[in-house]
Length: 325
Ligand code: MEV
Image (cartoon, rainbow, N blue to C red; front, side, top):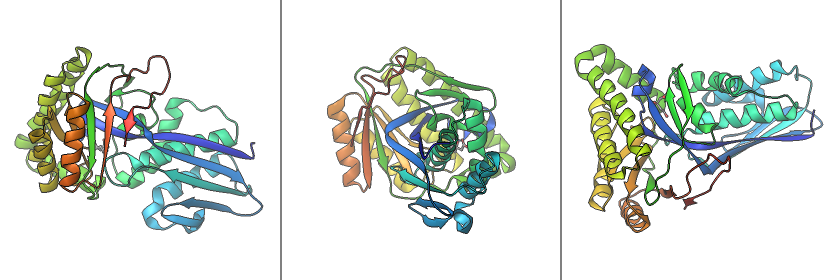
């Protein structure tokens, strides 16, 4: 056992496929390296404490809004027979919570990695995702696993629930993605339940939308391979339209998408669960990206990021950091 150990993970952005992924249709998501979570475990004299932005104290005194993290941590303590080992678990997160950037999954991934590092035990990717799912199930009800899969990945991923979790390589030499935080909480479980109710109550309207969103993700994968950013933009607009029809957009997200398109975005859509959270817009070049970012901030975005794809090829295994804040 080490005296001090760490685990790291990343924010994720779903480019295509939120919600339809819950129903077995494909999604494309990318990790954002500059927006990360680090969990650190350190041996201390007495007790087992957790320190994060929402709580500071003994693990067993964590409130119900942190039940997922509490349950996962207690599960890991039992797994390693660590009931009598005194430690502090510190969580440093750069992710805004409830903004569709996978904050809870990223936290869970970082915690699992820190425990395995602390006890010097090798961790497989499937073990990691299974353990992170303990937290995600409690926090989000019926997660597809996409958030954890992306938060733990070094590369963009192509994901089909319970079937495919494939890391994909792509290269978009000139375009960038602008990410804008609406400042409104995203409420994943509420949005997932809302879509579920629509699928059950109005299958003739909702199911075709889910099917089409899955087809859009397939077309987007081809567009990524052929560097067709114009088509990617159109597919983003089509996704936004379908997600709005499913009921997970809102006035602010719709307005942000419109403003991005009025400022030369090739396309724009919400990302993550919706009902709040972030919007993403595809820009043909850096100049357009800056213009979109400025326009969205003027319209009330609380934070914006620009993700360039110039060197967004991870096949070398290196983590490129192209994020401009
Ligand atoms: C949430 O980030 C993404 C959703 O598709 C839910 C899920 O995949 O579990 C809305």
